[in-house]
Image 1 (cartoon, helix red, strand yellow):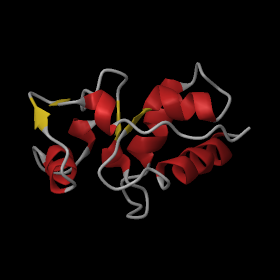
Image 2: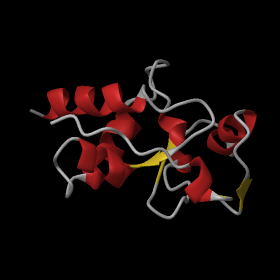
Image 3: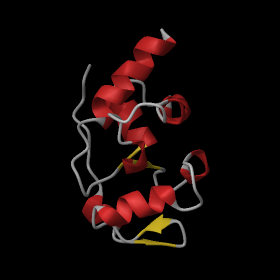
Length: 107
């Protein structure tokens, strides 16, 4: 179950467009498991050895880089987002609503 869930999370994360972000909760909701945002976070944490999963594009519901401590280097998550044109100030995405991407429901 867990590995299959993680793969479903990764499939959605791979769809996040360049220069956009989504939240752990939005991915959970798209999977039909709205209360599993924390498990989505665990999946993102486990994805760091997979270059095909853009984990840096997944943040918390307020646009805060809550997973940044799982990236190598002190500001790698922020640097990756900024390289895509997303502005980050004090570990929070500026204009979060404008860059937020809503995943499609994949029930």
